[in-house]
Image (cartoon, rainbow, N blue to C red; front, side):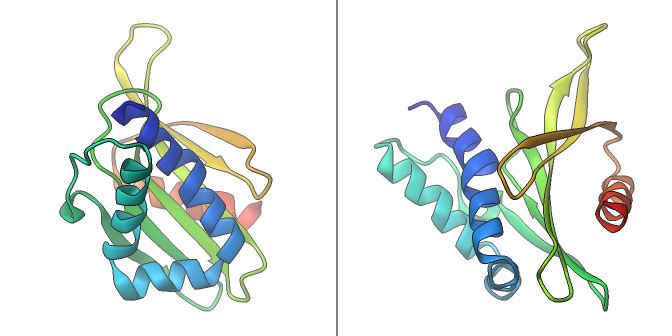
Length: 154
């Protein structure tokens, strides 16, 4: 399997499925262990597919976006996407009791009109259905605000 396929499986299947299966414990594991967990998961996929992993642990970054009374969010930064629809990052959100979970992805895309590179805010629901929230700027603060807005009013 080529690198694109492995990254797609990792970003669009494995991470969301583990998140929806384990919820807050998955998020807490990311917060406590930083890059080690997501990197080991990616390395596992490469090993399973008998393909050399071209990435290092520093190519993946775990950022705790916010922990407050209403929700916890974690931003997981992926290796820079070379092709569509690979992801720049994902945002994981959970309400305080871990009952409401949402996974948002920021995917590489291109304009249907002129082919210029864009970023799409998408997501996966608990049933692994893909959702599209439209184009977003490259400003991480703006993307985060949009994710909070969707999460709070969903």
